[in-house]
Length: 145
Image (cartoon, rainbow, N blue to C red; front, side, top):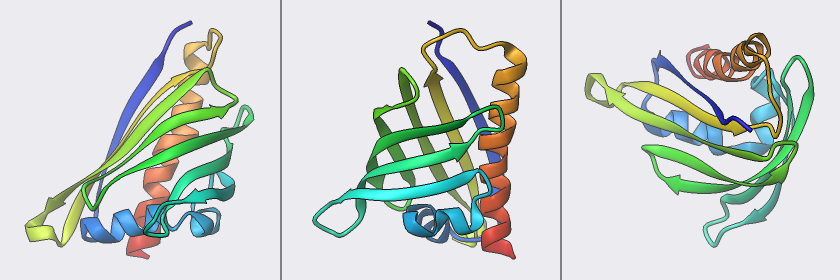
């Protein structure tokens, strides 16, 4: 099966740490991330951060559930390792590059997904728009609003 990937970018008027903090406050993600229906922290690390997190996402064409191990490189990167769910494989990362002396941030969301079956291009595009682009738009609105 094919591995599908995409990378989306947005510049946000907030420092990298604010972006990182918003995205690692897992329990509050459904309040401002439009595609996120539910998040449950299943395990925490020694610092109290979510280490294994389960997500339920509305990908427009289907609601998907998956579990990720969070990999922290604060405040420049938040990566994940796929542990199971509705995909064959899933990996991704958020990257935060400081701009204007750290007052703004270039945020990149890079995902690679193997759904375990062929997915037509139009469906891949819809998922990318619904999940990735919207995630960046929602992060921007949350931090700038």
